[in-house]
Amino acid sequence: MSRVVLTGARVFDGQDLLDGLAVVIEAGRVTGLVPEAEAPRDGREDLAGGILAPGLIDLQVNGGGGVMLGADPSVEEIATICAAHRPLGSLHLTPTLITDTAETTAQVLEAGIAAARAGVPGFAGLHIEGPHLDPRRKGAHDPALIRPMQAADLDRLCRAAAELPSLMVTLAPEAAQEAQIAALAAAGVIVSLGHTDCGLETARRGFAAGARCATHLFNAMSQLGNREPGMVGAVLDTEAAHAGIIADGIHVAPETLRIALAAKRGTDRLFLVTDAMAPAGTPLTEFTLGGRRILRREGRLTLEDGTLAGADVTLPGALSVAVGQLGLTPEAALRMATAVPAALIGASDRIGRIAPGRVADLVHLSDAMALTRVWAAGEALAVPA
Image (cartoon, rainbow, N blue to C red; front, side, top):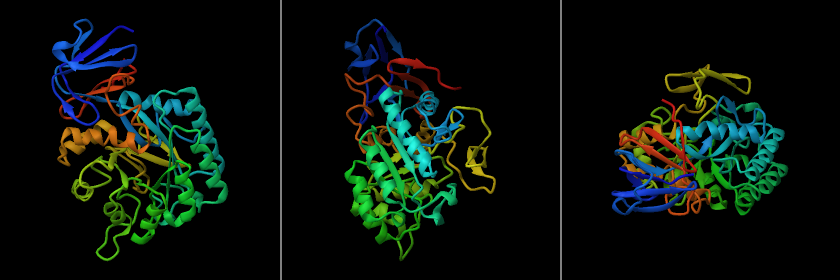
């Protein structure tokens, strides 16, 4: 592969937005981040403005390319989902299994382990969302499959964590014992509290036991009240707790997200997720989830009764909301889609930054956060119009 020298854009290196730098790519890796005046002359490509950033990272992706994770658990299924999101700017992701049977969960975990061994591009681990949830906050999850965590579930997850790049598990603290949460955390699982109707003290005990994240903050959880702060209050009042947010302008009001940003004192613990479903990267207008019809209309994914069922947004779309509606600076928003999720899954040494020696997984965004270019290991990908 010949040398490529990208110039003319501000460079977000994973922490700061820098001017006047060129990114040099050779053999699929970044070999230099140097002043433009000192960059090699051959292979130059002028990006004519905008922002050059690390490949975006999405820790909640239920499907893409027309398939949902778990429909046919296999390396091929995981590869299809990852491939669908790469041209959309998410070059690293954790495919997410929505509440399913113990058998399907086991098959997805095995497929994830095999995908890691096969080196599926973009595969950063798995996210198992359920089935250990509170049916009162089920959202689009099948209530017939929701159940408390058993010893076999705990053992299965702990064993898989040792063989996956990362493993996040969303559970309701009322559906798992504190000792089980502690065992998961000790095994390296990122325990994320969600789909819960718990009160403040129950949530706090979950965090004290080892949980360190919350799934799609504000959605499918007990809300902040004047006398009972609920799960939302626990997250906002727990400094170390991370939380994913769906910034599509639909799931959570911009004003509510601005309050969360103020309570968390910035973006160091908040990260953007898409909660994407099968239609991502396709023109599909509907699909099925557990035998139920899901409609794609006007930027929404819903069950036929109107219940939100995932989201129809890309990470660049979420960045646009973060900058345009939440008032974040571009660098603050970009950290929420690069450095923050990378740190949470323990992958900061590999992804979420632009630096010499790193794989050249990059995105180019307009100043309004519209995706214009994508490079995977230095190779330009076609970006959907």
